[in-house]
Image (cartoon, rainbow over all chains, first blue to last red; front, side, top):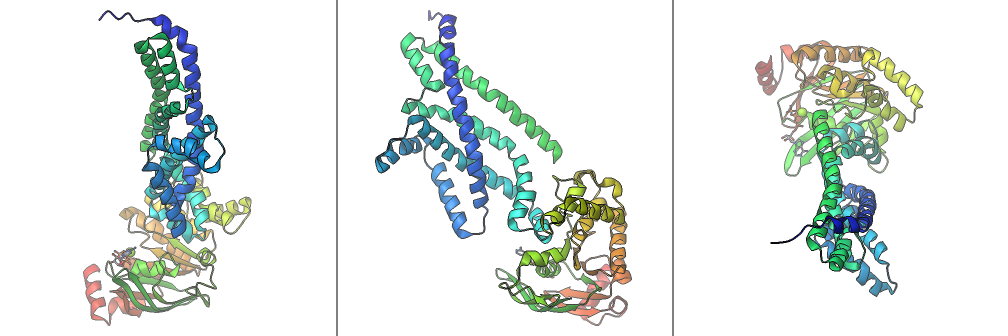
Length: 221
Length: 241
Ligand SMILES: Nc1ncnc2c1ncn2[C@@H]1O[C@H](COP(=O)(O)OP(=O)(O)OP(=O)(O)O)[C@@H](O)[C@H]1O
Ligand SMILES: [Mg+2]
């Protein structure tokens, strides 16, 4: 084949790639944090007896999970500004889209977590005179959060990888950086290999953490 | 103390309670016996509204709790303790926190006072040394005694027990029944669904025999066990005694 691997191009472009990875991590961390907030809220909504709360939560979750992230991003970045007449900066659009997207997936994780707690827990709490809210707060949710650490870790990994989609609105996260550098250097193989490994270095520790907590939780049960 | 009038409960098309009317007086220990599926648990769970009756009335201390407009069901439940077959301790809290949670959150008792009460109750059920243990570090019998202490910490007017010893290994049944016997002797009003006929005979003031969603017979334990009047009671007792 005659292709000569160049370490030099990797070394030279490394600072730029690292900056891209920084944005990738920032995007993902903020989106997942917001997602946990939003998702806890709507996850509780998904087990609510109140028909209105349940319906609203379900519509949100199903809409987000049933449409591509790319379309959601376009809707926020192009669609909403067209509607309201005010442009939304790319970074803000990315934060909003990814947070709202993550919220829906986390909501399903939280719902499943709540429903995995035995019914007797809620009944015991209620039989002691606690309100539904008190029982949720002090009895059900603390047990839920422990159980959903592994799926939350998986959601983090999924979102970290999916965050590359925001490169389409010119945000220079890791994939966009790779694209720019390889276009300039004509060193596609080195650059995309480097990008792949940088993703791997970010996801592997979380995979390990997920496996570790899964093992620990299994022992605890 | 507790009165039910013509209580009915449907689960969809299944008619589970078919007109249950009972009167339970202050300080009485009532045992409810009957075949599986006869509606004993459903009846008990209606008494603190874990199940909502389809029709009929329930009065606790003269207050009609089936009248939803005038009743705060959480307040009623705080006065009605319940002990479950599966204990249902909160696994993420130690024994002390399990007992203190409701008194602090519902009764707004200061933490120190709640703990004092908890320790007194733990002493009563013989588990003073387990205050800092977690539920999964306890045997079934110990967990059930903690569950009793947890319910008592709310200082309820009445205690409901749904087969409290059915999930226990035989050697642990006695320690739980002993706690319940003490409680009955101290004058606690108790409604106990149980298959422990020895307990019923020794402690109950009255035994209710339930079958097919109805109370077919009620009498003192000596009467009901030696000379049951109803054919179905006879058949049931002959099978289990
Ligand atoms: N939540 C529910 N939904 C539908 N059916 C129910 C529900 N709870 C109880 N049932 C049904 O109601 C009937 C009475 O049940 P219940 O648990 O009250 O009986 P039980 O006398 O306590 O029986 P056991 O001795 O087995 O505990 C059963 O046929 C049961 O399947
Ligand atoms: Mg039962």
